[in-house]
Image 1 (tube, helix red, strand yellow):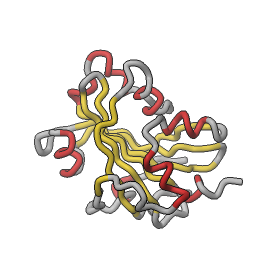
Image 2 (tube, rainbow, N blue to C red; image 1 turned 90 degrees about the vertical axis):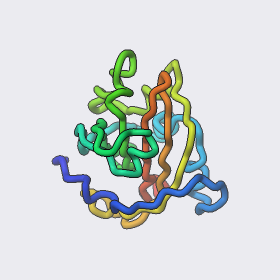
Image 3 (cartoon, rainbow, N blue to C red; image 1 turned 45 degrees about the vertical axis):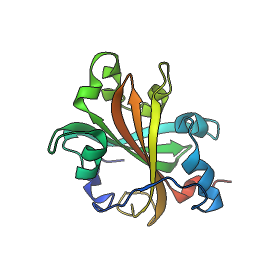
Length: 178
């Protein structure tokens, strides 16, 4: 798959709301509220792999910077990937990692390539998920995905005391598996 311009993946005014259990269709509710490792859960369902779409150092969106406590226009590592089960994309993920969070033993988080960030977050010392928000997003611009609308969650993690954001959008193919 050729790299694409994910700037069009998510509408810039995507509205995240605090997680409120019970506000989601039954097939998504358990995924949205799960505090465990999404990577580990997906690995139990089939052949899991990560296909990077974009990784750049750039200022995050204003709301992302605010949630991370970053000054306006401060750069962060932004990583966007598709998570696959077998040959089907089932999750689109966007991670925002402030450069200050990528120092010392956290440096590995900036060098994941085709590996899952989630696998590293749940290794000891395990990252702490502090807050979770949800949204209904339009991500129809991602190539090979027929998902005009999908539910997503965004989590604020701390790994070794350093903040990072991970947004995961659950694609309809995840729920349409045989």
